[in-house]
Length: 198
Image (cartoon, rainbow, N blue to C red):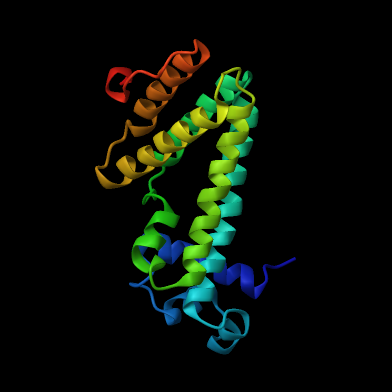
């Protein structure tokens, strides 16, 4: 069974917007890449903002699925599952088409002026946060929520460093800091500084 018009549009939008930026790519380019008429695009997505938000929602579902699958396959104990998040980030950062976090990129380009895009970005970040907090709740530590929040900041920081600097070791550095934080939390001690961990 062939792909639907919506699937072709979202695939084309993701490839173009992620590689080149949202503002740099016009609807006509997406239409041509998807092989869908302009009329059909606007039947499915009344504006570019609707199309961008839909592309982000589709990417979010796939991105989180890849992450959860990797963690499930490579993590055994709760600690190993948490650290496997950073292994997966390292694999993602090493992909040749890596251009940073699509959601941060979209927020930087449109977030302040596009409510649908802002909502999609916030939805993704909240779902990622909830995933990490879920992993943290399985840890044997006094404050799993606090640990999960700290690990979220490490992961988000690694994404930015890998994209902007670029820093190919960002995931490994963040993982070492995460391991030090987990060691301290398990021992019931305040975490060491990130500088000491890396």
